[in-house]
Length: 440
Ligand code: DSN
View 1 (tube, rainbow, N blue to C red):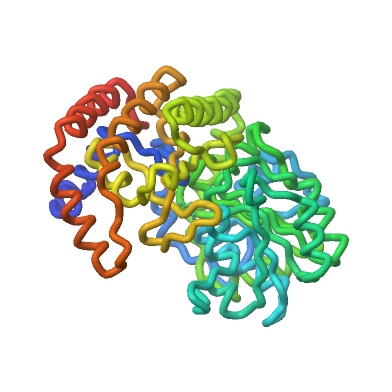
View 2: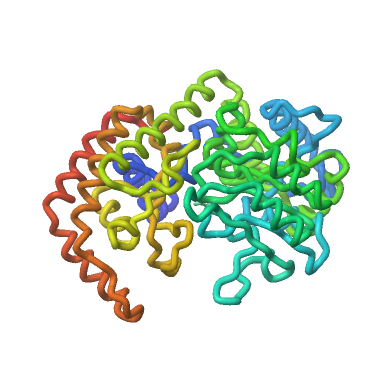
């Protein structure tokens, strides 16, 4: 028992548990895994090394871990209704960024070209981000990157434009997916574009994995060569990832995972993934996934009614991106003020954002975790009112144009906002609401 063996760590865990219980967790990539998933991740499976693939290992003592990994692979294929003659899955990746690096290492040669979603249009760092010419990810360091963009007006992808760009750029791989694109992706078109220029199509559905599993977001499997997903977001499992690949590619993928970029698989995590996959097969999960979307759409609509600009005008999934440029404020101070009010979200860049990533113009909100607690449209309406009340209190704090003054300015603004009576009142009301909705 940690509470007896290490009171320092036990106390931190207790405090974090209280925080997760009493605040609204609205970061779209976060969720609450079930107690069964957490049991598996804390189990004795973590004691075992198992480099290699089931029945092809470099260690002895593999009988039960082989059985486990084969079972979890089978569940992954079953959940997404995949034919094992066409698809295989590797359940060993430690998380999303390593999984993406593994896919690139498997399928590309150094300097080959990746075409991916631009970061501020909702893309992901691991698809090849550079900042001020400095490569910030494995992908941008070793490959050539070309980005595609959302339409300037609709903030939605224009697939005809992507096609034209792909014809010119001739990428070796086309990637969709990321962290902040609120719309469903047209995988059919993306697959067609990729294959018309001889590229692989990688669908990174990390964010919407649970929504795809429940059939409420588009499935990429018919059109993609490789599908990557993390397991801890809408899929509600432990932190980890899975790479699904067409049979012809799986040997390269497996080799890139081990020995390419990883050592021993985290067997305890694989067991947790297996439990999450079986939970996602239940009818209740489909209801949950539908409610995630209804909640996000209600939230978007209620915020829109209050004068907030919602990127792309709404959402098809679990996330809502507010563009605060019409309020002339950065997302940084509102995100911190919302934390004071017990609402946890994150500041985020928005399409065509000229502000720097540390002081971007948006706020990103998500509904997976609060939907797990059982909240519905009624609560979303309340939450939208609170978010509006808190952001309104921050409107006077416009960031100074001199970048060097910004950090001190934010510090001083937060000192003032700490005493704000409306924010304190919202914090109390949020606490009251959260006390009625248990966490697993
Ligand atoms: N950091 C995750 C997110 O918040 O979307 C993606 O890697």
